[in-house]
Image (cartoon, rainbow over all chains, first blue to last red):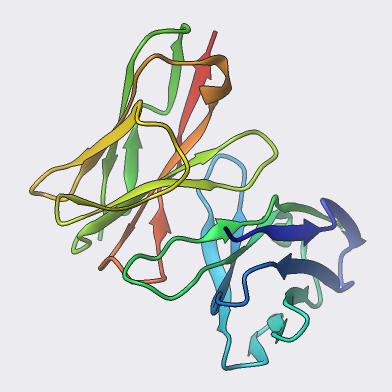
Amino acid sequence: GENVEQHPSTLSVQEGDSAVIKCTYSDSASNYFPWYKQELGKGPQLIIDIRSNVGEKKDQRIAVTLNKTAKHFSLHITETQPEDSAVYFCAASKPGGSYIPTFGRGTSLIVHP
Amino acid sequence: ETGVTQSPTHLIKTRGQQVTLRCSSQSGHNTVSWYQQALGQGPQFIFQYYREEENGRGNFPPRFSGLQFPNYSSELNVNALELDDSALYLCASSPTSGDNEQFFGPGTRLTVL
């Protein structure tokens, strides 16, 4: 089955700095790569996603890049703010009738004011 | 529009007991997925229900079972609880089975002693 590795497990940055979280996946059939943000006491929330026919996608301060050949994708957050502090998860899924994502183990992002 | 709700928020059980967790899907959504999130890990897919039928299952034993009702709310049942079942159980609803955008509830924290 699919295996998703995520690094780093913890990332500490100063407010205003950029943050980068990296993931690799094992199954070349995977074609959809979402990123979720999970705040304390809440369920994960989709923040951005990318499909395998696109190399990069940006939404304000957040961007995601995908390298299909290397089977890795990354989340980039620019101008970090304290409210960006949370656990971020990457995931990968294959096409099919059901959406069944495989999640990474998460990155705890801490933004110091 | 009401979001995904789950009950109870916390639950303590002893090994060998049975537990039922409940989820109300977001209005207009006919698909519910259940995930197990152990401490410090990413969510792991348990199963998905689409229009009252199981529509995909992860690598969980048969003692994990589910149900979806005509109003698309759902239950997760776990029999013969084991210590390793201690986790946050997340429910996510989506407009349809293949839809990538899932809306997560806040989860039920289950502790097995």
